[in-house]
Image (cartoon, helix red, strand yellow):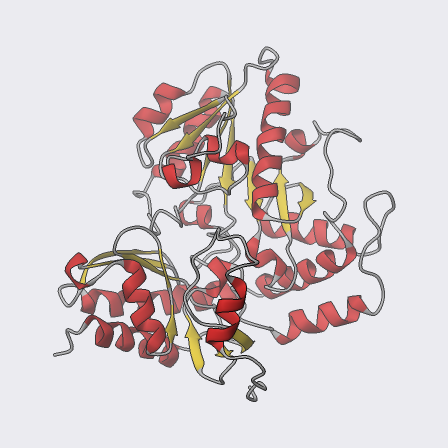
Amino acid sequence: MTSSVVTRSSAELIGAEEPVLAHNYHPLPVVVSRAEGAWVEDVEGRRYLDMLAGYSALNFGHRHPALVEAAHRQLDRLTLTSRAFHNDRLAEFAERLAALTGLDMVLPMNTGAEAVESGVKVARKWAYDVKGVPADRATIVVAADNFHGRTTTIVSFSTDEVARAGFGPFTPGFRVVPYNDLAAMEAAIDETTAAVLIEPVQGEAGVVVPDDGYLAGVRELTRRAGCLFVADEIQSGLGRTGRTLAVEHESVVPDVVLLGKALGGGIVPVSAVVARREVLQVLHPGEHGSTFGGNPLAAAVGTAVVELLETGEFQRRAAELGVVLREGLEALVGKGVVGFRSRGLWAGVDVDPALGTGREVSERLMREGVLVKDTHGSTIRLAPPLTITADELRGALETVEKVLGRRD
């Protein structure tokens, strides 16, 4: 990367945001102006290793050449038609995404929250049209400490009071059970249950990995009960955990998979509901839609993302580098790290609270040239681009050790 031209300093730009941007985020005090691969650069030309990757939206790194090229090619041809007309990119995208996930049909949307909202609507419609649940009585079982987005309906079944407080009244029809507890889930499922909606790995909760057998158990419970298994793979999917989908670690095929973030390659918002034909066929014209969902630019970039994943390269990299990450974190336990959870190239790291909050640790790492983000309390998450090298990853872990101040 070449240095950017400084027109306003980081401090000036951060100060300029204060009176005009809603304060719904608390970003780290770094102003990024350029990026490439696993590295970003601020307006003063300081470089940082990106260990967050846009909450997995940047699985393929910043400005991956194949994705940028696909976007440029499409920008010169066609960007938007709405779904009032067909476009020449959407069919290929849907066909290849369905094949990649082992499912049948695709409902294209834009953001992850839209994919979740669409999944909820589809599950309810399926319950009424196929399962025979009485009108307006469908229920969906979800897990505590979930994160599926921030719309009014989605925060209705969140257990995070920060996300909920002040936004009621809430949408009914959801039953919350503890994560990783099959007995509680079984007790919550009845004849009104349309679906079980869970994250195969809970990202926002701190990269919480369930016990072996949990996902297979959810699949069996839903099969026996005659309801849908909806897997929210918006953060965990598309290579992050060392497999195309995190459910593949237990050879599970859900009825519905929700995708987003990395599906747009860090270039445009792209999300999708991918499902069995019997499920998505419950939608008919006029019942659900999106002006931008399935637009040609999104379909072109999404197809390029699928092409990258079809090679298996990024899944292998995440699995191999995941070993480096896990071994590096194991070496830090007792040296400022009190515990961690990881799957593939994704980890939630619990720092000794005596050394600071997750926010404070993130700020100290930023000053040393490594960007991470806190979740809750003294936990930070690590989710670098899958393009990071082993040496870069080891360097980041050395910086974590340095910041925690326990270098031997």
